[in-house]
Length: 403
Image 1 (cartoon, rainbow, N blue to C red):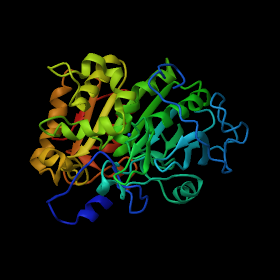
Image 2 (cartoon, rainbow, N blue to C red):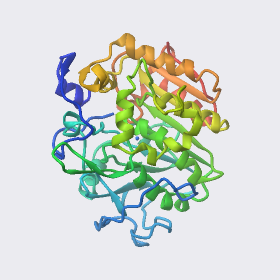
Image 3 (cartoon, one colour):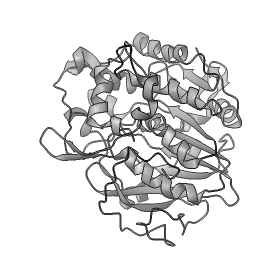
Image 4 (tube, rainbow, N blue to C red):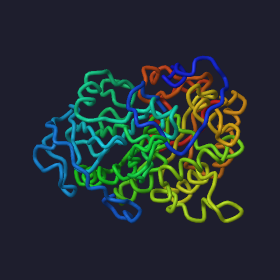
């Protein structure tokens, strides 16, 4: 499955462009499929911008009240819930969708993918808005994999479900409401702060939860890692497990340090999850760089009784291009080779080898994302079916599958 980024690039393996810490303000173009009520909200900047006044959902409480449970929901039906102050990178209002199941004591939080916005090239291919109108289109489409209640192979088919759309351009990780594009237009990278708002009502809505699965695809996969600690802190004693689909936490030399450093600056990651990592993310010189693998190691060791999983293809056709923006000190774009990408995947396994609560599912090919794809039921890594691996993971068994 190839994303619109690959289609946009065609078959060219390399070209040169100027990459700056900004992006186009345009919201046109195809989206690129790619990431606290309980405390520690100290890094979150509140933006009190206007909320979505669209109808649908949340009929029992004011959408501006971020302390009450979400009401007015219809069981086993997706309902749009607007949140006051939650915004997309173009400043338009956004929210979440909720799908409840009577009697369920477990909940899945699913973070959507859609690329990243960090230069002129990427931003025009990244969704900049998602409101009630976009939700209506999303709801009308089919949703296979983990959001399919009719799929017998889906281990969360009977759980409560929360869908977090993606329109902030920052892999659900940012806290920079005053980002600027090259033409000076404001870009509001507030994915992490939006999540903080959502949690303040999600948690009391599912106050009796006995298990939480935080999962997502591509940008949402990266977002699961960036948001893990604030989600776990919000849910308190309820265990939160994390499953990342196609958001690989690479570090140098498999991902040049300039690219994650650029994300850190542009999206203000020092105002979100990086401070939670502390000394675990510090390099030999005491500074923070190559923080993706370090942060994955940090959460697996900080939360040894929680489960963490990561899955991807050995030559992910989208991420191998996406990570190619690290070329020539982040001044060019050269797709990662299969050997380079597979090397990065194997390095993640090596780096996390001592974490018994961390598992991986690696499969051959170039496909990008599976958990919300029709291939969920057929994907294999060697002789292991993905649906079996996910079912075992949810049930408490963490393993490595594939080469």
